[in-house]
Length: 136
Image 1 (tube, rainbow, N blue to C red):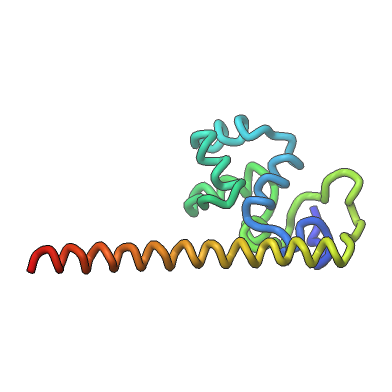
Image 2 (cartoon, helix red, strand yellow; image 1 turned 135 degrees about the vertical axis):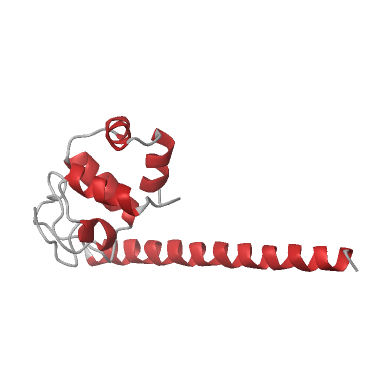
């Protein structure tokens, strides 16, 4: 296991939870089906975690860390004990252009998630106001 620097494959600046989960799963030699079975979750649930569409609850996070032989901290933040980088990239650094692109992509992903949450709040307010207006 290693604690990667800021420019390596699993850097917290360039990876999401889903990236780290799928990378650790692959490093452990498990398929999505095998890991889902070991965790007692549906395959779709695991795929949603790896695609950053949802996140596991605390008890599943702990199980994931144990099954994948990574620290819980690394799984959540990218800092701490994680798997070795994929073959051919161990110890190598990503180009600054690639790091920048990955960072921009992660930032955009966060902006989209915040916009989606804002849209949900506005939609709930709108429904509430429409129901109140209909009741008048």
